[in-house]
Length: 306
Image 1: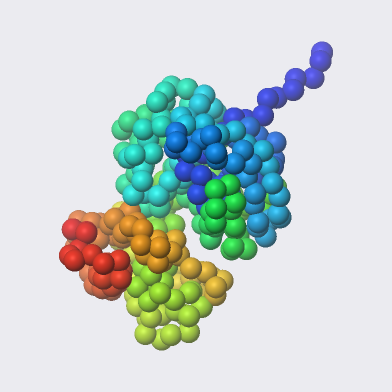
Image 2: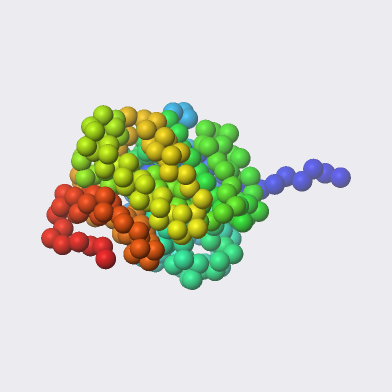
């Protein structure tokens, strides 16, 4: 019998920034079909290529560009949490999409997406790494790593996608426990984002400053306490050790947002910790102090978080 030739997976990227650009470029490089979904007014002039500069390699790949999400196997949601609602207006025909993988910061977006599009198609996932869109279609991946963790219930819908990304350089894992998957990133991300933004320092500068390092470590302890109360399996000592080993030149996306006068993702990143602490009666005074410092740098007159 003739050998069956499998068709390339079809992917759409809704949010062609640093994260979406990195994922899209690597998938296209691996042979998948990739469509970038951009604002209708930008489609005509948006580059039909992605150029990636990365420790994984420097390359340029062809992609399609569209104003709405087309029929695809996988839709990657890679917008900022603050931009999710307006971005979803480009998602006109959810039935044409087999799987939705949100790579937003935070936790609360998962429940929102499941309520709209169904539990079976929404595959919770997290990504870690420093990557930035420096201009349309031009992505710079600065960290020596890109770690993608995906809820194992979505394994069948993703096919060999994670294998393709791993061959390029990603570290990919399927994780069985959803609270551990989602909180496992947040207990790293929130202290990193809040501390670097409040201090306007790199990771290395935070770690070498006893006062800021102490605040960051206290925030990690608080985030882990809330995560454990929420049912996640996290080890504060491992988180502290991992934070101490981060590349010294790393800066957070929240830090860059404040620097560029864009709204920081405070509610998505710090909100779950503050709200969880309230539910469980946990002291998160260090986290609140950092949130207040970020709000001050961002020019907020009063707190944006309950």
